[in-house]
Image (cartoon, rainbow, N blue to C red; front, side, top):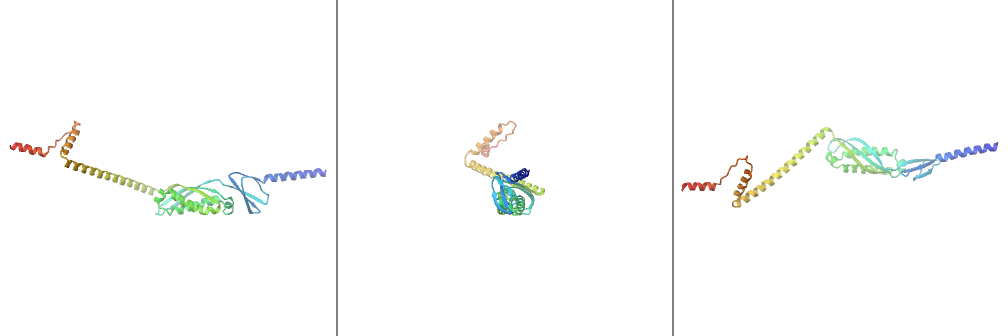
Length: 254
């Protein structure tokens, strides 16, 4: 009887021990890394596969090392030329040192997004409105460089920053629209004046050629008359050269 009771207890203890072993086996996926702590001290970073964690003595934290996308909250900022604007951006980052991302900083994702938003407001103040609108890539690159200097110590790699929207006040939008319209009118006036200069130069050369070539003006006159006469609704006025009038006058005197 006692032997049977001993076997039963041994079986129960063995089953509980088996459950404890099964319950402390951790599966780490390919896109994860495990940070193992033993009695509160960092032990090692564990790669993909099965890992056994000693109960009570050890603790395992899983870290996702895939690239993450953070939609940064819209920030109000003032440009270098004192224009109030709102700007939003997207941040891409990944964890390349799982141990640092847990040991050095608490909630690395939240800390990275807050740092990026603060930096975004600061950097906008270093650019004028025209630079902000025309050189978004330059602004984004500046934000990326500054954020990466800090996150590198957290084991985080910044892979890119992209500006989404630059929102301007309605009054500033109307001002920019008027400025663009004035610029288009200016270009049209310049092009028109350049065309008039070229046309006047061509007319001057044509007039000079007609003045120096005998009979050229008469040929041009006849050509113009021929063009006009093609339309029956036109009234044709003949220009008689003064030489002919003088000849007729001389003929009368004789």
